[in-house]
Image 1 (tube, rainbow, N blue to C red):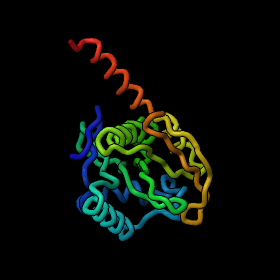
Image 2 (tube, rainbow, N blue to C red):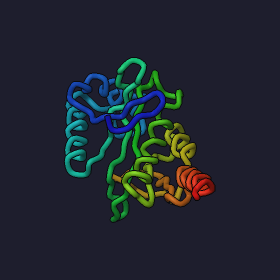
Image 3 (cartoon, one colour):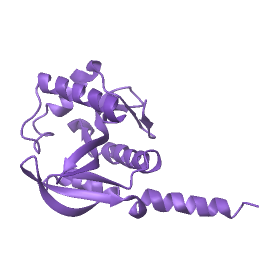
Amino acid sequence: MILETDRLLLREMSLSDLDALLLVLGDAESMRYYPKPFDREMVEKWIDRHHRNYAQHGLGLWAMVLKATGEVIGDCGLVWQEVEGHQELEIGYHVRRDRQMQGYATEAAYTCQDYAFNVLGSDSVISLIRPENIPSRRVAEKNGLKIVRETLWRDIPHYIYAVQRSESKLFAKSNFLEAEKSKFKV
């Protein structure tokens, strides 16, 4: 396990997750903002890509697992992306269609943002989101990310959503807790 929320576990993907991830990444409706839905081979390559990310960077997209059932319902995590010639730490997420609109992506992405700022020490995180992808935009906005500009990423228009550590809800919460603790120090 990498991260835990009230309802979810985020852990490294494995080939045993292939069928569950195919239900997410292979769904035409869920993947309408991608060039095309993934087939079985593409999902296998997706898992392999993230295994390389785990080995090289210690992070990647992780399997999103419901604590209550142990069921894999998607993925969420942190990935280094080249954007306009710079390396940016991106929060990405995909949730199976029948589990969308239940707050799972927001919950998992918030936990990844916390991990990026408070464990990895990152100064900022981004999410690359197609302008027409309103559900993903809502997830980013709920977690305090704002559009900083539009870019062509992989030849497709994307908004770059971003939040700086100093502007994040997590930073404000952390500073408040530290200030409260200092009141009780002798």
